[in-house]
Image 1 (tube, rainbow, N blue to C red):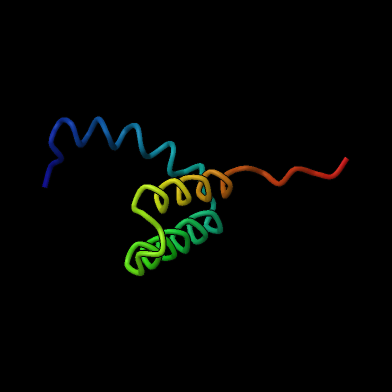
Image 2 (cartoon, rainbow, N blue to C red):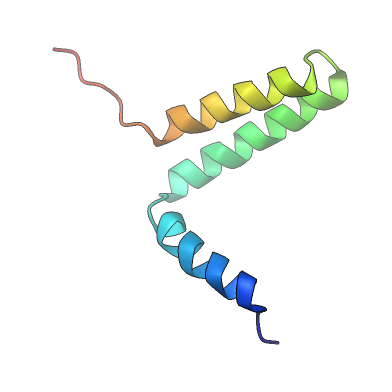
Length: 69
Protein backbone atom coordinates (compact mmCIF):
# COMPACT_ATOMS: atom_id res chain seq x y z
CA UNK A 1 0.00 0.00 0.00
CA UNK A 2 1.36 3.40 -0.96
CA UNK A 3 1.72 6.20 1.56
CA UNK A 4 -0.31 9.36 1.18
CA UNK A 5 1.67 12.49 0.17
CA UNK A 6 1.76 13.88 3.72
CA UNK A 7 2.90 10.50 5.07
CA UNK A 8 5.71 10.33 2.49
CA UNK A 9 6.80 13.84 3.43
CA UNK A 10 6.73 12.97 7.14
CA UNK A 11 8.66 9.72 6.56
CA UNK A 12 11.42 11.61 4.74
CA UNK A 13 11.75 13.91 7.75
CA UNK A 14 11.53 11.24 10.46
CA UNK A 15 13.83 8.54 9.03
CA UNK A 16 17.06 10.58 9.36
CA UNK A 17 16.09 11.54 12.91
CA UNK A 18 15.30 7.93 13.82
CA UNK A 19 18.68 6.76 12.55
CA UNK A 20 20.42 8.96 15.10
CA UNK A 21 18.92 6.98 18.01
CA UNK A 22 20.94 4.09 19.42
CA UNK A 23 19.29 0.89 20.58
CA UNK A 24 20.06 1.89 24.17
CA UNK A 25 18.34 5.25 23.68
CA UNK A 26 15.25 3.66 22.12
CA UNK A 27 15.07 1.15 24.98
CA UNK A 28 15.41 3.93 27.57
CA UNK A 29 12.77 6.05 25.81
CA UNK A 30 10.31 3.16 25.74
CA UNK A 31 10.94 2.62 29.45
CA UNK A 32 10.14 6.29 30.08
CA UNK A 33 6.91 5.98 28.08
CA UNK A 34 5.84 3.01 30.21
CA UNK A 35 6.74 4.94 33.37
CA UNK A 36 4.70 7.94 32.22
CA UNK A 37 1.75 5.71 31.34
CA UNK A 38 1.78 4.32 34.88
CA UNK A 39 2.00 7.81 36.39
CA UNK A 40 -0.97 8.96 34.34
CA UNK A 41 -3.05 5.93 35.31
CA UNK A 42 -2.22 6.28 38.99
CA UNK A 43 -3.17 9.97 38.90
CA UNK A 44 -0.15 10.86 41.02
CA UNK A 45 0.61 13.70 38.59
CA UNK A 46 -1.52 15.86 36.34
CA UNK A 47 -1.40 15.10 32.62
CA UNK A 48 0.63 18.25 32.04
CA UNK A 49 3.13 17.41 34.79
CA UNK A 50 3.57 13.86 33.49
CA UNK A 51 4.15 15.06 29.93
CA UNK A 52 6.60 17.75 31.02
CA UNK A 53 8.54 15.19 33.03
CA UNK A 54 8.52 12.75 30.09
CA UNK A 55 9.85 15.39 27.71
CA UNK A 56 12.64 16.32 30.11
CA UNK A 57 13.58 12.67 30.61
CA UNK A 58 13.60 12.02 26.85
CA UNK A 59 15.72 15.11 26.32
CA UNK A 60 18.19 13.84 28.93
CA UNK A 61 18.45 10.45 27.21
CA UNK A 62 19.76 12.08 24.04
CA UNK A 63 22.34 14.25 25.77
CA UNK A 64 25.84 12.87 26.16
CA UNK A 65 27.06 12.61 29.71
CA UNK A 66 29.22 15.57 30.59
CA UNK A 67 32.69 14.57 31.62
CA UNK A 68 33.98 15.82 34.94
CA UNK A 69 36.59 18.48 34.36
